[in-house]
Image 1 (cartoon, rainbow, N blue to C red):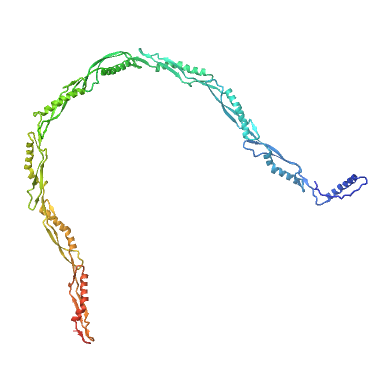
Image 2 (cartoon, rainbow, N blue to C red):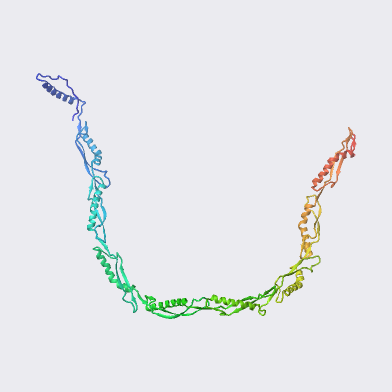
Length: 579
């Protein structure tokens, strides 16, 4: 198709004598002829090719999970694209449009079809007869029954709507009603008791819920009743009791609850038949009846019988209590036989009477001089004794010899007991004092002395000797004089040297000094002679050191040497030699 070009024709290109319309028609014919020629011959005007119609079938590819995509036709109409080169180029542009935009168009305009997934619901039958337990039935809509172009949820909701609409109806039509038996019971009397046994009636029960039926409640209950009838008597014979009654009994019982010492009386007692029963045997019932008879009979006798009490036998010690002042009564044993007194009131009353008699007779027995004596114990006695067998120089100790109260006794008098104690002192006092375990001989040291020279003077020192003395009486011994003196000597040995080194002096003597001096008081023009100032060894002494003693000599020389030279020297004339 050629490209359009603009062409113009001025007014008045044609005229007409007929009419304006005729002039215009002639002008239009000319305009069309000349315009087409102008367009065909104009180099700037092109031939334009328009595309033919192009289409493609595209399936939607963006459906949500579960959606089935729809396919749609995407068409590019003829003439949408153009080319001034060729028809093929124009058609290629249209095909490119199809390829590029086809899926987007399908995703925008194609539909997604969703089919329901399987949907189920459990429904319990609601129309069972009374007592029936309804069955629960599942109603299911299979997958793919319902579809929706909106969403998976919408398709599933359609299926769920069916489940909800039909589920209960389906359960009531197809679910079963299960009936469980109610409790069923029957009473059965045991039929196999031994002779004399009274049979027990036993209820046999089938509990509710043991049997079931899908037909009716009555059918389930009948199954339970069948069990009751089938097993009831056998259960009674196995579990029911046969009761046997004890026979009547008569006898006598002796009261046995008297307090200690009481003798009970005998009392008659009877027990009726059937006082005890047994579910074991007649013999067991009679045995239990006899046990009850013995228990109740004794209780009856203990309640209604009487007691007789004898005083108990008594024994004990009694002290004589009629001695003269200072005497202590001796103790004697006295016994009283059982039954010396009796009582029908109580053992305590019988024993009280027996005890009174025992105390009265026992004391009288003890106060009889033929049975018990009055014992007089000595009072405490003592005397001081001085040891009299010490060796020469020993000072004897004194000790008290004592006889404690109560060491001696007499059944005659207090005086006789005290004389025994005094005799002990007289006989044994001095020997007790002379025993070294009781009194000692004390020896004191005599004065001990030793002259000890100091032994720690520095070199050149002459040590002083000092006396170390231990005064008499400083040490003692209860063994001998020699031991006491040895202790004093031990002190000298231990401390004497230290004392000498502390109290004794070290004497140091000055060394010999022989200093040279020159007479310095000669008349002018003369010179003094040489004079030696001599200080012999030992002229000075010191208790400090030899250096200190020698320093004293040096100071002497310094103080007196020049004077000595001036006094003892002589003056020399010039050129004159000393003698």
